Length: 351
Image (cartoon, rainbow, N blue to C red):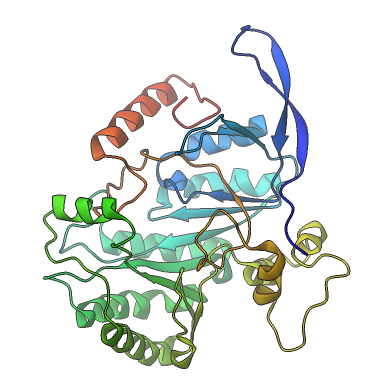
């Protein structure tokens, strides 16, 4: 059994060709919404998100071209928020809770302050405090710590990375249950290399096998006192001997544990007639029929629909693949802010 694609529903939207009129289109109606791999919606576009939630849909534009796609929230059961600074979004949680949607956060909490790789994020201590506040607000099972990516350079060693992770983990381990990390992927994404070089990060490179071994041994040692579920994102290597599993950020296991009373969602994750194999996990079984075809082969996330937009994130991270340029991101964000201050929210982030 394989995933067949999201259900489509009729959606009535304003007709741009005839102001004041409407038209009906076919919209996809995902059960799981990713918000977003492409940009930090909680940090910068929370007002837009709540506005679109009230309207019941967004229009998504692919970064690779083609016609925009209308995405209806009519069937949505879970929102997965990706953020490096959800602090501006915390006041929105009461309104989100009243809608009845399930949600959780993938909170990327890195420490590249000294190296200046993430110039747009708040100070590390502030981000750690936000992590703890968020966890206390929604529960430690619904805030996943991501350290992503792990970057080596002339100035950053494996030992440095382990020390950065130790300092963060010792403070936030009681406030999460999961750590997801990834090794930087430079060879496949030349844009990442160019961005790092432009930021003055010399010698940025991928991990050797010996460095992978060194890092994973060190992380396993740290996790003996944290007791977190540790996984590697989009990683082809088998790291199970270190107690490290294959990463699943959009995670069936997490949803079953946190939202198990949602029968519609549970029926989607474990369809009637689909037998769970003895000794296997929900994640491995769900992956057989719910693997996201839009992600890399090594990505273990289940299917979701992303609603973000490239070149809109103002964190301006040096390793980012989703911003064409910092100038483009700044221009688009300035346009968004101008519209937001006028109370105008388009069906896409930038209109």
